[in-house]
Structure formats: structure tokens, C-alpha cells
Length: 146
Image (tube, rainbow, N blue to C red; front, side):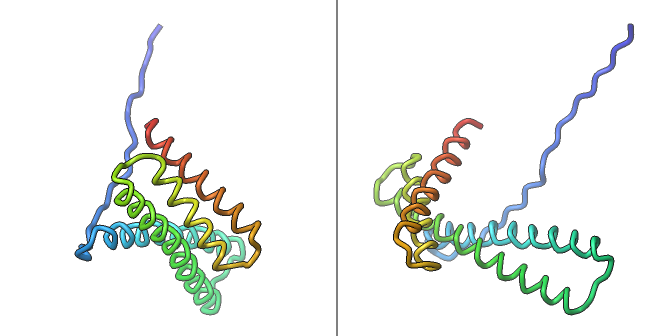
């Protein structure tokens, strides 16, 4: 009986660029802002492209609306990522060690700050801080596994 095998791998292209702001904290913050902001804008492009295909038409009004949404989402998520990266880096520098606790501190403080900026409900702010800390800690643990 004949057998055949298929072997291969799939790798994503890695594009990395550096903008040196002269300060490591600013470098980490800007890097996170640009990378996550780009991901958020790309997500909007995919969603809006689907809507265009579904509608079957493109108008200048819809294009302008999509462009504004891309900028808004990119700026929002880029800012959240920049705040998180900055706080995590600051915690690392203050504590003098690099471990999962920095991610937990960064996630919790970022969750609380983002929540406090958008509402005044103390319980919601605390819950968002817990969620931010939990998600960041889980992501850090997953990075250790791979």
C-alpha cells in the first residue's frame, strides 16, 4: 500500500521597525500603540469590507464613515495598549524583576484607568481592574507555555 506524507510549515512574516524616542518607557509605549492600533484598524477594514460586499455598493459617505471608524478604533486600542505597556514596564523597573506580576499590575491599572475614563461606577471600575489583571496575567502565562 502506497503512503504519502505532506510536511510543511506556515510562518507569518515578521515586520519590525523601531522608533527611538530616547527613553525605553516611551519606546515600549509607542511600539504598543502602533502595533495594536494597526491591528484594530485592520479589524475595522475587514468588518467594513464584509459590509460593503453584503450591501453590494460603495459610496463616498460609507467610505468616509469607515475611515473615521478605523482611526477611532485604532487610536482607542492603541492608547489602551500603550498605557498597558507603559505601566507594565514601569512596574518592572520599580520592582526590579520581570515576571507575571508586572503583567497583572499593568492589566489591573489599565483596566481601572480605561474604565474610570468612561464611567463613574466604582463597582464597574473595580470589576474592569480585576478583568484587566486576569486577562494580562493569563496572556503572560500563555507566553511562558509557548
